[in-house]
Length: 486
Image (tube, rainbow, N blue to C red; front, side):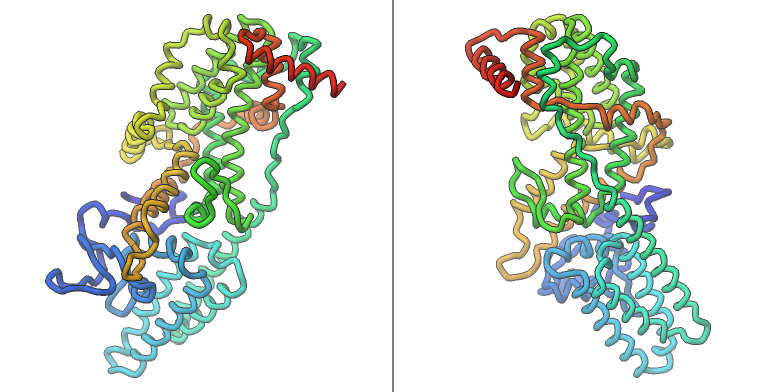
């Protein structure tokens, strides 16, 4: 799979990666003869599948006759943080570089002449590392190790200073990337607090002039496009090292809130929060409508929005909308649903059917991914997976495969698959949104008040009274709570 053009160069190497996993052998990678028995590392179909940490690090560092495959660089740098801190890895890389440099300097004139070529390869490795994983260099220890390696390498080309200029530019770009990411993290997510007191307000019926989503945007396609804008903006701030936190910092499949370094999990939590807010916003917009005819129109509107999201390739917003309509306060509105033309909704639910591990959704996602690969326009390149399921897939891969084999070697085959999935996500997130941004609509989607679960039930019961003993008990409890608050 080739790296996407344009903005991809900001975070990924420009050479195609993962092509070697599709049948061909790793380009530029020195491999043992197929007849040999390679103990460390172990190869299968031209790819390393296991090895000691030391051997894997050696395969990362270029020599005067060898440069590692880009697929391997990405996969190893991504997965190495599970076993070793980035600054420690940098130190080991630096030691290997110094050793090779000393050997060349002590060799023949022909070998000394290769110093510049060797230096260029080391710089290329550092360049790919700093561009793809800039956050690895956030602490002083990592920057110190980087500067130490850079200082050693510049000595290979002291005559014209070309190496020094390249390293200077690389360092400048790294600092800019770190600064940009730091600024984003300083902009704290304004989590919308559910309006827990809305039930009291609902006792005096809302005015007909009350603003709702239809008064801001009545075109399902336009709203789906604005949702896609928001999705792509959110995913653009998720980085590969953020996603690797899933491997080490996951509570459970049912509660995928990450713990640990807040700066490393904030983007994941912010995106997860957006999904929940969108679901609750959909439920709020439906439940707070007083008249059944208007409520029916609101339900059908969101069904059309979800359908447009599906057509665009925005599966995350589609799932959030469906989840909102399946919340109990909305699902129980039988009189409303009886007036809804549900054929389109049934199709959407079919796509999101959880049976067979969401087989239908995965088929649709694969189709969108294939369309994206051959697309000529950004409109056809959009692929926004259901983030919840994407995270669970990575976590599942982590749980069913051990990090190390019984012989103590790292199970690198596991990390090939994890990095492939993460690379797919990184490719999709680089697509620039082709739709014109509407600030008014986006402002409503991001800031409109949303009801708490309690307020949703109050609004739902006031629209359509309880129909069974369980609902009657719930409604009685809610009303008692309201009276006590009053």
